[in-house]
Image 1 (cartoon, rainbow, N blue to C red):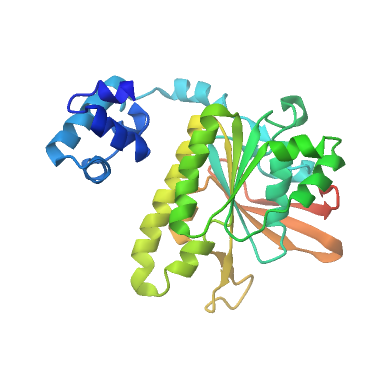
Image 2: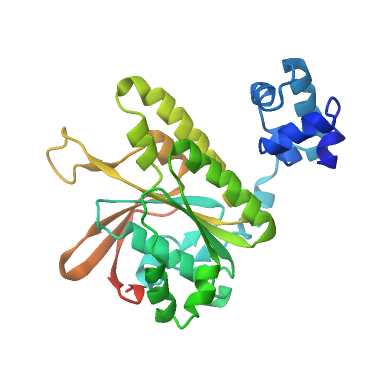
Length: 311
């Protein structure tokens, strides 16, 4: 609060309004638009522009970096194991921090099972493929099952009670609540070492609330904002973001698989890894990497056992 009050044009009252609206850091103000601050703090557009400019100067926003310094930053990224070596190899060593990974597929393809396994594995030591951190699970379809976590924790020799204590679960009632819960996750991450954020599922509420072509632009704009908040969380916390997504059948596809993920290009451009999950014979699941900036397309086979995801 005191940091906000030091900005020109910001007194205790405006600082409180900004803080309560989620602008609790200089960086958040620096990257905001004047219109957003006008709405959040009830100030004039000219005052909002001055506040943003001052925040940019203090936060040192907008500098260019050389390629070698960016390469050094990439070394900060870590990988979270899925429990299956072949699945890990497919995605370059596991789910990557500072990135969004999207799992999409039909009902029963294993999306939620993978998400549960990540909530357990994130608590493992780094030398075993974990991140020694905690998880946040935003549940939009009542899919989180603590009893499944117990099975998976016991499957790798961890104390189920301790594992459950380190998973913070919230049910999202609609798309606005879902987006607000990302802000709540930010607050938790200030006090706890949150290294994984799961949204299961990403598009369910958006799909239900925005029906028809006339609402498509509004839906995509809102979904875009949500995805970028998730991406910002991943970078600030050096965390893994795992979102599950539903699929729809395309009636114009006559050959091959007609299913495609909901959300279109908005989700496709923001997610660094897109993984298509589907069932196979004998209880097997197939994970197909269909999009990544630096990895080739490929497939991995894994199974879902009582004790969790395995080769």
